[in-house]
Amino acid sequence: MSPQPVALRECVATVPRFRIFIIDSGWNSPAHKVLQENFGLIRELQKDDPIYVLSKEQSIEFMRNHQDRIGREPIIAVHDLAAMGESGTTDFHGFRLHLGLLRTPQQALLALQNFTRFLTTHRQSVDLEAEIRTDLRREGLAGAIEIILHHEAREIGE
Amino acid sequence: MPERWSDYVAILMSALALGYLVYEIDRRRRKLHDVFDVLDADDAHITAGLEAMVSSGELQPYAGATLA
Image 1 (cartoon, each protein chain N blue to C red):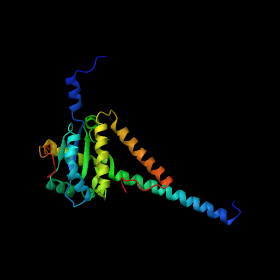
Image 2: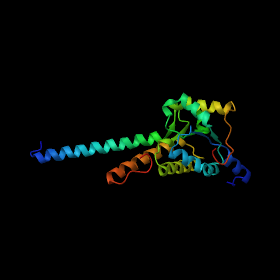
Image 3: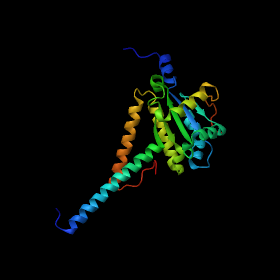
Image 4: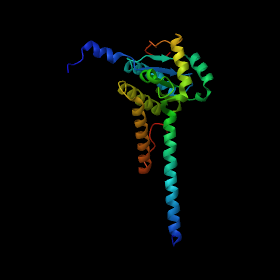
């Protein structure tokens, strides 16, 4: 089999797989500051997918319509265009990070780094839902092992 | 049936330890899902709202290098 022409490979690499939304109504929180300080790097690492940043006013209006999410911002929602093309929004169609639930800058930064790594490494995934659920199960299992071994609390979510 | 009180205590302590383990694993699992989870039918209205903002042109891909 002959290798793909360079132009075709570049085209495949740059077709957006995700739409990334950032919703941040501006709480004075560690997560808000971490996102502000690291957005440029995320932007650079995620060049192939469009990022939509809701303004403070748009975010507040959004929260007024989805009050159960208040206090969880900044929220990063990622829509998987491949999944949405197949089944719309009735089933799996992306994933999201409630960054505002993380209380310290270290936790927020680690979560942001993990999230960005996940995005970049799974752009070409054929079955993204299965991979996410596998990762979540692995995290749960790792947490269980840590409890059994009496280790310190894991960074994310504590 | 256990014959000594110490056996009852050992069984009770084991049950408590197991219960704590199950509780702690479940608590962490819930916490993880609170922070990071998939979008599914429960989030459809939120997704639709965001996609509608893109379709209407209210939201454009962010071109800036930093957040304002």
